[in-house]
Length: 130
Image 1 (cartoon, helix red, strand yellow):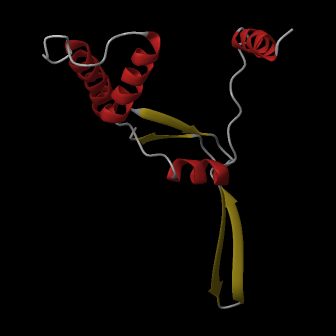
Image 2 (cartoon, helix red, strand yellow):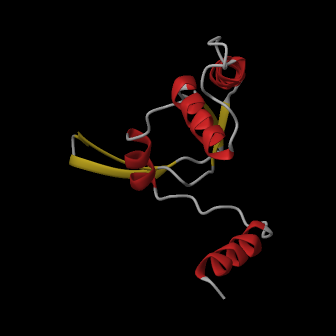
Image 3 (cartoon, rainbow, N blue to C red):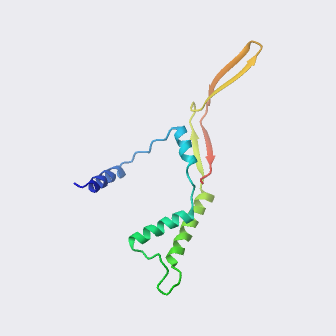
């Protein structure tokens, strides 16, 4: 068996599993999120056109010199989809109870006081897709 066949077999088996992905630890998630460029219709269109070229789909100007309408169509579709994602989508996040730990310090007439607490109710938060 060739290595490509083995990799394809493993990918087929994994694609058939319905296992939710692991959540990254918060510090790693934060670091990964900081390095993302965000959605770009130009960058994605360029990638699609590059893939089209590899598949033999024409991306160069037409033989008569006119613009290739497939390229314009591709950009239009990608831009509309990205605009919808950016402007219409919403991210809802559930924060389970007892998941946020808080430590506070203060003082009173008896001296310094340190308290530890946690959220007692589940909460919902919203975010923005970028």
